Length: 222
Image 1 (tube, helix red, strand yellow):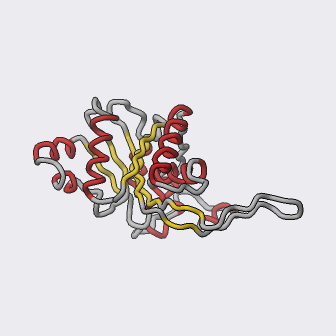
Image 2 (tube, one colour; image 1 turned 45 degrees about the horizontal axis):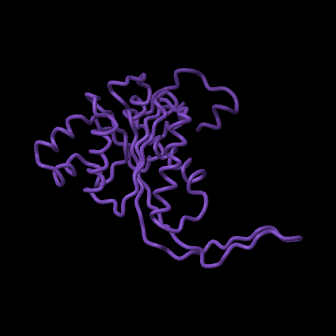
Image 3 (cartoon, helix red, strand yellow; image 1 turned 120 degrees about the vertical axis):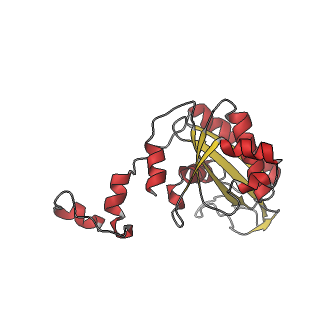
């Protein structure tokens, strides 16, 4: 946890971009019951059931300090899909960066070995050498800032029912362009000092408080 938080404290450096990567399942589908518009004495109604039109996976890379994000819809979430996506990020989005610092969840597909299952050894090693990987702890995916950006996408870009994968791709691309033009950023304020107080129970060795605790505010943190 502290390793990831240290990455977030580092200043912006365009030669060493610091990015967060995440992915999410999507299930396009058609509503089985058409929505009913509002009428006198009754609000608009919309049935939550729908008929699935396949599955898709959504990859996202987000650079918080630059306010840039890159998304891609794939049919699957295999090692190959992840490796190809990261290759695209490294070679097309950050071709001149000597090193890319990457924060992501520790899934079995998110490993340097995935590159070697897709590319020749020389190319795989060249891609791996450009990455400095920092994994979020198990059960702590909330430390991945890209997860926040996916939440924004769910509320803004995917708030309505999407019928097909093609429509999903269009909505995602439109949202990505809109957010990048606005340079939407995340104001991350959770630091290591905060973690040592609020998540004190997680530390094996309990250290004495550096300052006396007074009042309700400190009691609420325990």
